[in-house]
Length: 174
Image (cartoon, rainbow, N blue to C red; front, side, top):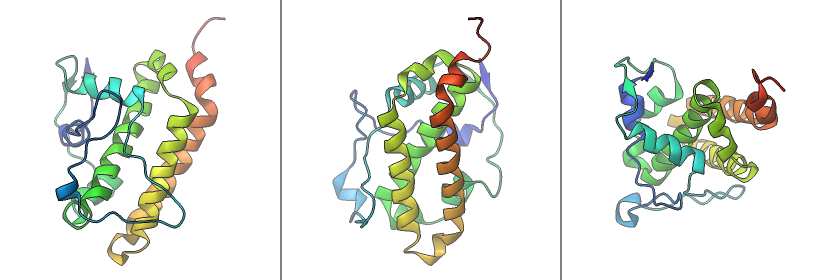
């Protein structure tokens, strides 16, 4: 199977250390100080759906096409920023939300049956993590331009959240 996605994107989201229970393994020495939000609490974990997609991305089941990440996208903005060195824990969480988002979109387009592995709790965690990252970025002027992308992602996830049942049954004869 071929996915018309950037090899760079797939490498970026498929190179996260994830435990078998979905917890993201963090190196406390290199993650530095953790930002504390008054409003949001991050959860360093991914859904079963993301783990399924992650395993598929790290196998030979998918052939990738080497296309560049488009300029102006959230992923490109993150890659071109210093956030990986300035806030490694935020950077890791960004990679996790991109993996979750990719997993949802990939499943909707290619593996619709896998959507049964996403739960309301997973969607709430994803949205909470998006809000946490946006909250952090609101404290650093150099990241202000990325917040709009996170807000759009939050809205898109909300649409998916409320349409999962319709999406899963689309195209099926009842």
